[in-house]
Length: 115
Image (cartoon, rainbow, N blue to C red; front, side):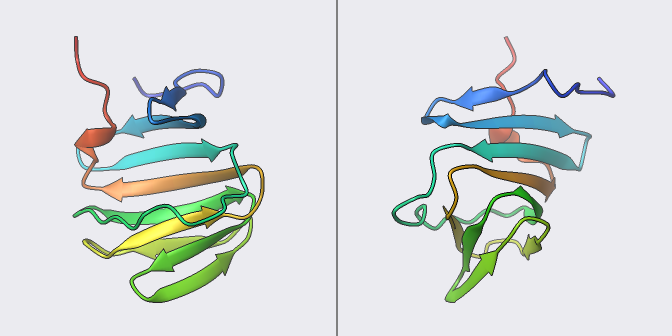
């Protein structure tokens, strides 16, 4: 599918119904749109890492980004990048935050299982 319309393709995460994600990808490149509607968060998400390179655009809201031992305050319109295998996490500072994430290679764990 070459096009994902705005009103299609969103799925609520099983782990948190206040977070929805839309995924579109090619063989080696993935974009996701993730919307958090449960903020502001009292504490950051637990740090995680992955082998994928990541670039993210803050489309709405404010958040704190934690990368290894560094902390950044990000606003709508800011962009951040995460190299492979760096520990990172976020803490939303507003009720609603929307991120547009790019990953390479694609994150197989974000794909729906085929039936």
